[in-house]
Length: 238
Image (cartoon, one colour):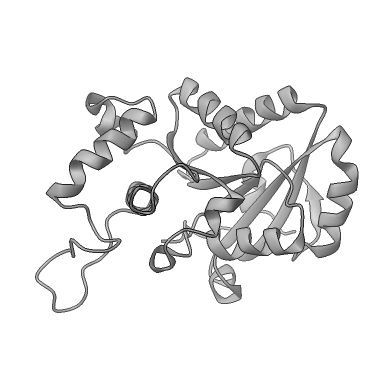
């Protein structure tokens, strides 16, 4: 599940300072496009505090047609959230391995989708602005999971941690509890983080200095300025 480890493993935390909300969205797109240009195809999660922000981020990403975007929010049913997360994991990491001695992939729970799941998966793709003819192309794109904090609490436990290598905190966590939930849900616990390079990038608007100072107080590691070469976040000592 983990991406190829090049630099030191563990949690590495960075921030990107932006002037305002419009600049924040532009900076996010520049960051993701720069990562896309690197040799390693990285899969990531974007954390938002509100549904309005989530919608704006997802819309901007879909407009680029450069990412396979999965949006999980509170308007989805429990079954739809489970299916969306399963599809994200399948697109990012491939189908789950069959258990030893089993005849093939399981069709229950969070396993590979069976025929009954195909229609629902198709409808979710269409909601994301993708038609069925683009499905094969989507599978070759970097996978992006966009979610709200409310939804993180409702994700199916059997599909966690998500296992991404990069988390973008598009909106700063308002508390240590929210921050910890993001890290635990998306990266896993301490053992999981020590097994791979886990990178967090915080998008900090000019008016959010107070929230950023609070984050520095409860973040698991020092929050450093994002390097000019974004790939250095995954390779350099920090």
